[in-house]
Image (cartoon, rainbow, N blue to C red; front, side, top):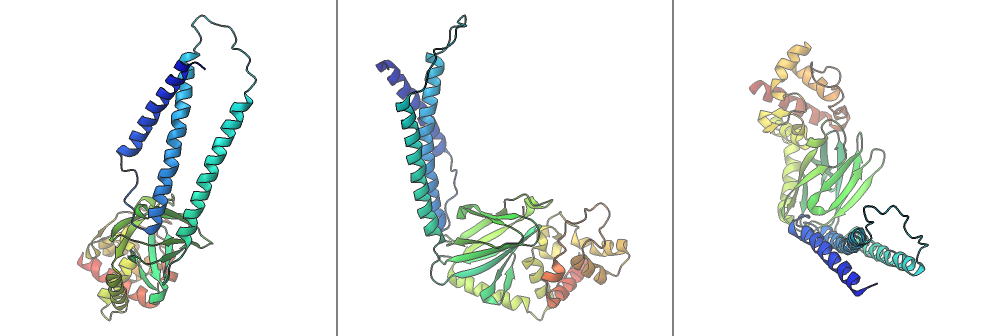
Length: 339
Ligand code: CUA
């Protein structure tokens, strides 16, 4: 190869690599990590990206150089010279990718191993996904259930996932981890939050009509604030005031993800507006309280005109305790009458 050819190959490679590196650095592609695990995953991502940029630069240099240097003249219809491979070149382009992939594999295995290692005093959270809501229950706090994922900072958290219907996927961008939630099996994810804040929990598996609204929040709190919240919640659900308890059940079961209810400050429009329950009950020809109870336990028994069937989960009748169902019905009846 002539010296000039090598110089132009290197020149094109440097320019292509420079452009790719500039694109990689110009935008904040990754969120600021909020967990120890994300703090290990993100450097790994950059490690792989740097390798990709170098490979990209080499490939672009060879392609552009070949296109220009070996371009046939417009009137040249002759065949190209027969080329029968180059053993030296083939060994090189087999060995280099083998080494690269092996190194990436080893570094990834180390990161995965560290991320899976639970710390002391693990907080267990059972996560239930259903169309179209998340609920989080804390088995060490008498199974207290919440519609938002509250976590203490700097403590090992083991999430155990189950789905009531179809495949969903749990994702918090700042935690840099994703976990499928599959009916019929349990999956787990280990997170050690290390930054206070509120982050979006997003379903990343197309799971039906309300997939895009299947969101909630992960709130990382100081350990003291977390303990205070745990105890306060346990009290609210068993509150003798049915209004307070009903509001807690409404919130914990994420009814507001699909329904509007002024009293709860929610405005979603996937399901019927719950402030219009009295009119809906009239349409169904039922007393308000019976109608509300039936619509929660057996949602497909009566569906108002123009609304789709099988969107509201038919699982609440089993999921809610009798007391929870009673206070929820009372809460909806009294709130919708005011609304
Ligand atoms: Cu659940 Cu998408």
